[in-house]
Length: 231
Image (cartoon, rainbow, N blue to C red):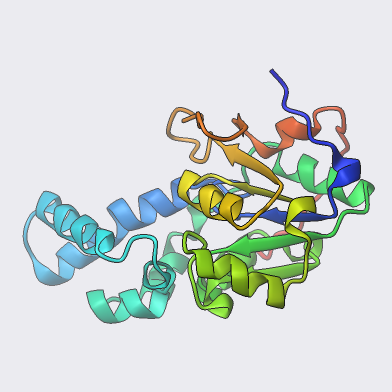
């Protein structure tokens, strides 16, 4: 069933990046396989031991700003995390129909902002592979805000950085915890993306309107678009 939003009542569009616009497979692969393999080469042990140790280490700072900070992880793991992201950049890909949505918002003259936990160095790597800059009026990283999107303080500070009327704002994310924080902050129109990773089955939310791909909510707007690659 197609989910419809009253776009005439929406003034601002906020979008997450990973799992909404870009395939979250890159992030899953990078942190769960690629980084543990690099760590194991340096520190020894079995692949299983390395993976288990790093996953436990990640979990300690889950849902905080530290989790998104590449400099933090470079220091903690004694690895050059930004350089490793560049090595694995071939797995950075667009989500299906993401550009259909962005193009539809442009046709409706809606201001679109990227609102992401991604660290600025992560943004540089990903935007270097797929140039999404032209589609956004503003890009706000959690590093600029000082809090992760899961934290209520993020949404309070965001209103100063990016003035908006929460009740007339649309926000799409693939994480229920983030959407809940946005809901508490008064964001009026929320959308959960169930098909965040191309390598996993969709995981629909029972709490929020949920679709496999962002473009499904503008199915009546199918326009050809192009995007430039930095390669």
